Image 1 (cartoon, rainbow, N blue to C red):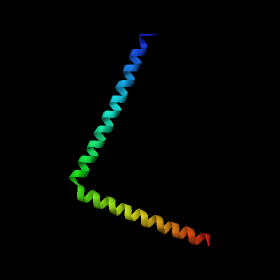
Image 2: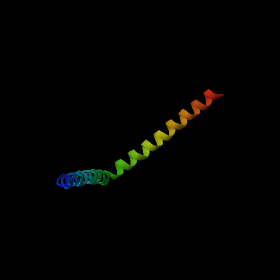
Image 3: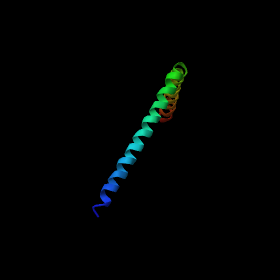
Image 4: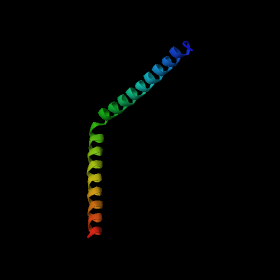
Amino acid sequence: MMSEHPKDLKNVVENKTSVFNNVGQSATNYVQNAIENVFDSTQDATQNLVNNVMKRRKNETKAYAKQE
């Protein structure tokens, strides 16, 4: 029974390390892409934000008009 515990613990540590490395790699890829395409990604993000706000306000206005 005691011999299984360290093995299980080792697997947990390895799994958590693997997840951490994957998240780190994903973040690195995202940041690298954003830096390489800074103008495009900033412009796209701003445009998406504006579009989403406009859609939300339009829907809120329609919903408010239906209530009256």
